[in-house]
Structure formats: C-alpha cells, structure tokens
Image 1 (cartoon, rainbow, N blue to C red):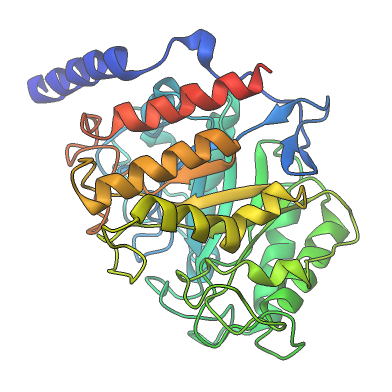
Image 2: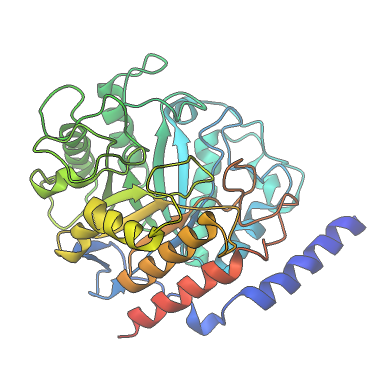
Length: 390
C-alpha cells in the first residue's frame, strides 16, 4: 500500500510541474465534428486540433488497454487529461472486437476497475469511452490489425480468415454501437496499409477504393465520426515524387485521386512519422537533415494541408532519444516545430510504455511521466493553443 501511495505522490508532483495550467486546456468542442479546408471544426465552427496519445493494448492477446492490470482506469484517463491531452487513439484488432466474454488484462480488484469485472473487451472500451467523455477526452478508434498482434499485415483483409466484407461489416457495427457516443470522433479505418496496397487502380488491393467503401457503409448508419484514411507505402497511380515512405505514410495519391464520401467534409488524411530508432532510412542522415525532412513532409502529406484539401492527423510519432545532438533528437525537434507551425492534429505513440523503439510518455511504473520527453510535447501543445486563439 505504501509503495502505491508514494507513486501517487510522485505523479502528482510531476504532473504539477510539467502540465500547463487548466486555462490552457482545449475547450470542449461541440459535437459532431466536421472539416473545413485543412481544419477540423466543431458544430459551432470553432477550430479543433487533436493533441493526443495512443493508448494501445486492445490489438493484442490481452484484449484491453495496457495499464489496467495495475491502475484504476478512471485515474489513468484523468492523468491523460490533466497532462494536457484532449484525444486518445485506441488501436484494436478485429479479433478483439469479436472476443468475449471477459478480458484477461484488467486488475478488477483496483478502485474503479471493479466496475469492469466480467466485462468483454468491447464493454471495457464502452466504460472507457463514457468516462473519457466526462473528462472532455475525444476517442479515435484505430483498426490496427485483423488478428491479435497482426500489425505487420499489409492489407485490410487476408489475415486470420478475415475478408474485406467482414472488415466493412465491423466498421458498420462500430458506427452503430457508438452512434450515441459523441466523443467517439474518428474512425481510423486501417493502420499502416503497405506492401501490396495500391492507391487508385481499382484493384482488390486499392486502398482508396476500400476506404471509400467502408466510409460509405459507416455514413449510411452514422454520419458523426470523421473518417480517417491513412496512406500506403508505394504503388500510387499517376506516380509519386518521393521514392520511399513509411508504412501508411504515402499520401501522394490524394493529389489526383482523393477519397470521396457521400457525406462531405468528413475526411481526415493520416500519416505516421518516425525517426531512426524505428528504422534507419536514407533520408535520416545528418547532412542537410532538417532541410531534407521539410521537403519530404511537404511532398508526402503537407501539400494536403497547404492546398487546403483536408486536415492531416499524424496518427503516430515518437522516439526515445530527444537529445538535439543526435539524429533522433534533431528529427523530433524539427517535426514538433513543423506540427506547431502547421497546426496539424497528432496522437503520440505512445502513452503507455513497452514499445521497444519509442517507449512511452509514462515510465514502466505506469504512473510517472518521462521527464526527458514531456517538455517537448507540452511545448507543442502550448504553441498550437496559440493558433486556436487567433
């Protein structure tokens, strides 16, 4: 008991020292959200910038958010909000959606977690969404994979027996389930399409075609959520200016073949951006690094923002090394400066620790904030808050 009390005292001190004043927090938007040019706007026409975190776990065998094995879910959500974030991207697998009757990764004897005893993965998510709404947190659902731990699969079908029809039906079911949950604001249709995924050729592997199909099905039952469409890796009809991209990072196809849905002003394009800790890349070299990165970002996805086509969500970015003396740290500074200037939405990977190449914003005790990371992230929040006041 004493160790838990000490941990709580520590996080209170850290949050107090690293969190911006409540007055700087994002005012709760009026739902539903829509888009206007390169901005997300609420029902009153006020600009919204998602400044969030990824809280993963529902895409693996435990089928629940990592950290609920050790902490009260309401306290975890409260900490996310008090730290300054307004959104959570929740990765999940199709297998998790289908699972029951109860999850294995919840300490249901801790505080509010007692409410989760015996619940299925989706019922636990329901409870998290309800509490998040009370706190002013928006939820983005991210279909991370079909099978548990299946994030490496390149397409939205073909894994563990799942078909495209099943994928579309799943999104329809989720749209119905959360139709009356106003803070479920975005559906990220497929995490990081890559490999065989194409854009604009009309084939079975055409991600643009599939995204339109799923988006149409969602909008037929629920027109509230924003439809989030990630890029691919290569194979864009009409060609591309850059020779290589991160998985899901190639949005160059939007130039000639944008996604079109029946309900207008509901599309957000999304990309993921990482430094060398995730994987060495030819563009992540010291010479002219910042200049080269800016050129890549503008050609790869920034043009969508600059040409007022649609908003951009950076669904994932993160690092362990923030030192400006390293390639990783220089990349992080350049990218957060870029996001601050452009006012693009983002969800950091990740809130919880455990990701081998980026770590988390929490340390391994699942309570304490990473002191080396938070100043950069809080600076980004503060810079973007100024944009919202203009």
